[in-house]
Length: 254
Length: 248
Image 1 (cartoon, rainbow over the protein chains, first blue to last red):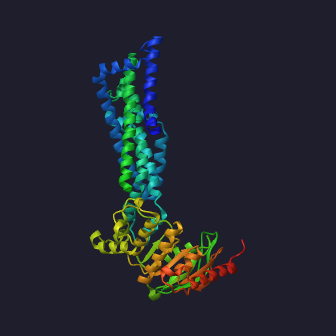
Image 2: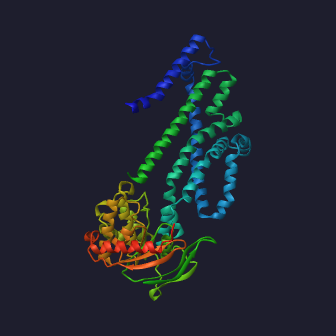
Image 3: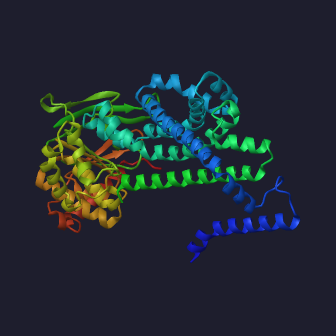
């Protein structure tokens, strides 16, 4: 019973908030360019979905391309760092510097240097989201249980065998933690990049729709775009959680 | 089998973990290294395994035969299984690391699992196994490569008493069947007296061999625990400890 109530609670809270919001806008006669009512937002979406949906698709394409590239590159770097101390010493500080520098500050440079707008956006989003995968996978590769390493040593395992039979599979749960964090960061990165690029960028994503709507004071459309972004974020988050849970079930087989 | 002569181990410039240890181990021995926490018994075991080198002294193997890969089996306090692999795959690991295929190893893996009573659990992942069963898999993994020496570092210390008694019985039976040389580290007087034929009592700070006690318990595994000779042995070890332990 309590479980069911807990499951329903977030939806009930959301619906109530929407109801209060709608009623307040009605009663207080708030103009839609200050705060549109939820129904205004729905209308804006219904009117504008031919532009909003492709914009969403464009932003998601940037997001997933960036997440994919960041995953491949981060895992490769983490493996390189696990295999060679020299490589780690050379790379690690730069990875941290790249991580702590706000992407908003370097995005204009990236957009300037990379002529192809889509690639520039992917690079920006990738810069935002690569670090959790890199650091978690790296930590996982380093934290292989000592006793198991001893077992491998006693049986004359080569470095390569120790890496692919022990350290890599032992790092998988850590990698999944990183992937879950990076997934939502990739969306954030894609949107930030679109904002910075503005009309000089791809001019096709949801962030651009938001900017444009704000210039034209089409606030309901802005809210509709915002809503699509929030829903995409939560969907990515839930999907990656489900994927991670599924992968862990297969991993431990219980 | 080997003679460890005047072996000492110092970690860095700091504490002396082992001081002037000399022991001779014969093929077929079942030796318990018994002592309180921090007496260096695990360190000594790691030296015997070749996982660490002594600071001074040496271990000389009979006929100059230093054990190679897979010739020393090691069992830790934790089962340390690969969580993503099932029981059979975990037992297969030592053979796989030396280039055997699954098909070549099949008979050995099945036999090792059967030896520890887990023939029916070959496909089970560690998460689905109890603590005692995981330890059995760990023992099967240590035995599958037919090691000349089996080293065990408090393998039953984390198990509940019922499971521990059962595993002690089975280990004793296994030793009677195979005659494999075993060095078993423990901090339990009862465990040492039950399992081993020879008990090396260690005293701490620095770790030294304080006494070398031969067991005269001859009863079969199921009848040992209550026997008069076992009780006498427990008493003998207890008195030895009282004599050699420094006052806390």
